[in-house]
Structures are given as C-alpha cells and as structure tokens.
Length: 425
Ligand code: ADP
Image 1 (cartoon, rainbow, N blue to C red):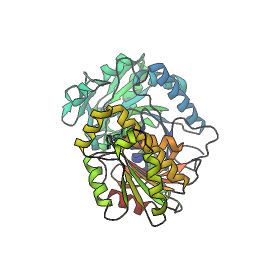
Image 2 (image 1 turned 90 degrees about the horizontal axis):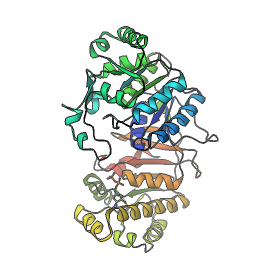
Image 3 (image 1 turned 120 degrees about the horizontal axis):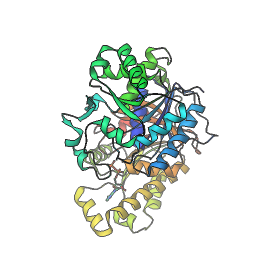
Image 4 (image 1 turned 45 degrees about the vertical axis):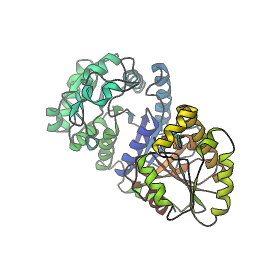
C-alpha cells in the first residue's frame, strides 16, 4: 500500500472529522485508533488518519507518540503528513503544537512548514495571522475560558512562536489570493531567512485549495480539517488520487442482526429514541441499577437475545436532564457516567458475541467505551448518514467484518437510528 496522504490527529473526534472530510473529497480513508500494530492488514486506501490522544498530555509524550505515528505513515509510503490539530488551535505555551511540529519537521528534513487551522465551513478563518471563531477573534471567543487550553491571544504567529524553537512567519491573504506561485515565492523567501514555519491566512475554501497545492511540494503540514480539505482536493486535481474511489468503500453487505445503543442524554438523542420506539423494540435501562452494579447489562442481553432474530433493537440508558441531575447527585457525576459507559460496553460485547455485526452507538464517550471494549483497531470511512456521521467498516477487528455508526450527542435527524440502519446493510 502506498499512501497519498498520512495524517496524525491529536484527538479522536478530530480524527473522525478529518477522516470524514477526506472521504467527502474522494479519498479512500482509514482512521486507526492509535498507531497500527505491524500485523494490521489494511485495505487499499489513499489516506490513513492515526488518532492519538495527545492534545493535552505532557509535550514529550505527545512528541514521542506523534513521531511513532509519523514513522508508520511514512513507512507505508506517505510522502506528505498532515499533523491535525484543533481548528481553534487548542494548546498552551508548553505545546503541544510547536514541539510536535518541530520534531516531525526535523525527522523528515523539511525546511519550512505551512500551518493553518482555518476551516471556513465551520466559521474558522485566519487573517493577518489572527484566528477568528465566527465573527470574533479567538481571544474573545468562548475558547478564552477553555478549562484545559484557554486561548488569550488570537495572533497565531505569536502563539506558535512561543511553543516552537523555529522562527514563525506569515503568508498573508494577499499572497494566497495571488495563487500558488506567489505562495511558493513567499515560502522560499521565508525559508531563505531561516523561518521554519509560516501561518497561512485563509478565509475561503479556495484559499485552502491554494495552500493544499503548495503544501504538497513539502513533506509536512499542520492544520485542521480545512487543511485536509485543501490537501485532498489538490491530490485529486493533480491526478495523484483517482476521484470517486471513496464511493466504493462501503463494500459487500455484512448482514446479520443489527442493534442500537444510546448513552447520550442530549435532546437530539432523546428525540431519536422516541422515534425509534415506533419502529423497533426499545429497552430503557434503569440507571440506578446500572450504577449499583446489579447486572443491568446481563438483563439487557437476555432481553435482546430473543428479539434480535426479529429485527433491529435499541437499548438506551438515556434520561431527561432532571433525571440525569438526580442520578449524579446520588452517585457523583464521574462515577455515574463511567458505570453507565462500562455497562454499555459490556452490552455491546455481549451483542457481538451473539452475532451482531451492525451496531449504531449514540454518545461520544459511550462510543469510545464501546470501541475500546470491542478492540477495534481502525475504521474504513464510508457514506455519510447525517452531517459528520459516516458509516464505518471495522478494519482488523477480532470479530471480523462489522459496520458501525458512532454519533456524538447532538448529531443526526429525528429518524437517525433508522436512517443509519438503512445504509448499514
Ligand atoms: P454525548 O455525545 O451526548 O455527550 P456521551 O456518551 O459523550 O454523550 O456522554 C454521555 C454521558 O452520560 C456518558 O458518560 C454516559 O455514561 C452518561 N449517561 C448515560 N445515561 C445516563 C443517565 N441516565 N444518567 C446519568 N448519566 C448518564
């Protein structure tokens, strides 16, 4: 396998977002959970996104894990690697964007790296090096109060300079608007003066396309899913990736019983559960019994066993905000959440043992617990069920072929569970 693009994402949901963006642009894409084991066999793909959890850990650990991911990606043919960061540039003066960029740049021998978190479709734009979140500068956005990475400076040239050992320049919108020759000339000028990286302005998608085209002359870039979009479009435009390949990845039907699990208590999910009650059997877990450890997952599995033969089922722990608050007051928020996530993971494991190969999960943390328990090393990204929620085909899973849909709380329309199952054959 020769990858056209390698990506290292500093958190899981950012990795999914990027993998989904690359797929929409026509790249056959696999998202792996952590650095793949040597024996993992991947299907023929254009891009691999390695998901790490390195955004807020100690910077030396983030560097070590990112370097291992980079080594794997380049070992599988990736000439260009995108280090995927948050579109709000979440980081502190200690890192981890600068230290990881410096290490990857040294490893691949790159002189100058283009950096931009811009993603206009989600309201992230960069002008004169300043990041805007919607209509306000980063330091006036809610990110100023982020619990882990409060962002008090919207000027990314300054922000990155505090984290990196190299000098940070700017490729401004005037250069970007003149097109790739002007950007190449500006980068050559910066590199000649000893700058090792440059923040690139981008306000429109066409700016990202220009940036993507120039970035492919280099071995490393740093950015959010918008940069992925620019790189993917440039790969397709240059003929390095054949368009349309990602439409074929859904592959052969998997068949067998199907099940849905809901651990999200969001408004959208509560409504989706109510709609599902019209079309499939639904079991509501007793959250108190889950937290007190009285075999609620086993009860759910016994309930599911007979019904699975008849068609899809849904098992939900979800409650209304008042009920959630009451449960948390009785048991503590973290203890309640953790116990319910583990019960959902146990239920998923039991369902898969009974032959379920099509599984829909609602809830970000809930999905993480389920995927970890099932030991799934990666996913091939398929068709979009709803904005930001693709069908996923497990890669290298010990239980064999399997389709999943993993939805964070507020995503999807009212019929999400049926919509998902229609695409998961
Ligand atoms: P979302 O994507 O909506 O944030 P998550 O799965 O990430 O959903 O988070 C929901 C959290 O709420 C999980 O930790 C889950 O275990 C917990 N939870 C689920 N059901 C209940 C409930 N009835 N009461 C309290 N907490 C719950």
